[in-house]
Length: 319
Image (cartoon, rainbow, N blue to C red; front, side, top):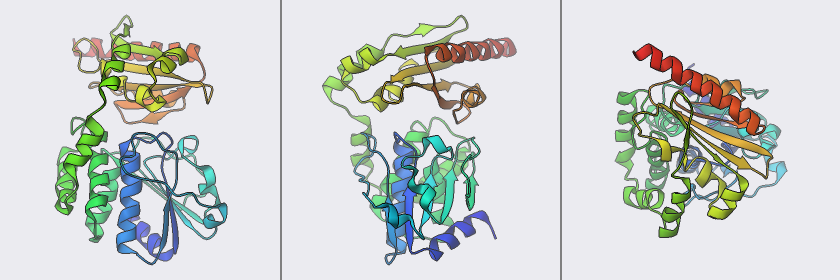
């Protein structure tokens, strides 16, 4: 039996299903989690299905459930868009009877007692993996579910700029759009912002360069407070302020997380694999879009040294 058939079999076996994803969600985490939730509600209306996790300004119109611990007893947990224990939002997944992971990142899982680990980095987003399941088993999809799943695809591919398998991605995008997602409402939500926020971005337009052209920013707690923006809007939201510069093959954004006493690094590259560097520091992600949580600014400097060396090697190879 294929891994996808096993996932559907487990879904059909359980009366109660609780869906998790990673902390500080991006739109693919929300899209895959909430899109799956709405799809399961549509196809299995008699089941109890819940979504849990922290919220930020990337959730579109989604809301999470506040549930008691005892609901995990005899429940199936499905975790989307993450396979690393420390990054999962709400650690009560450990209380469930069984765990399924659906993830498109390069990382292996460090969770114990996982019944099904469905990992496939050939998908550009976790939302694509959910759409692929829907397509293969002919599940019904509401326009609302289609909106979240399409939104997860759009954002995790950078509006279809970053593609692992272009034909697969566009085939699945074409399929999910049959279910009438609310394109314009979603685009208005994700790609428009207040004048104040746009002007605040001026605080993040400058950057420094390493010897071999790695662009980077270090955002400390004082700058975060001055900006008035939430953490995710700076950490992930500002990394591509340094993108699209011919002389910059790799760029990185480091943001101080005072609440958790660490520094979150977001790393991006153009045509260069850097995920192994993220993994070296306990992180992971995609080949050219990844990140890691770092202990202090000294460790940040070590990451920058490694990224600079990678840029140097890349420049040698293309000469």
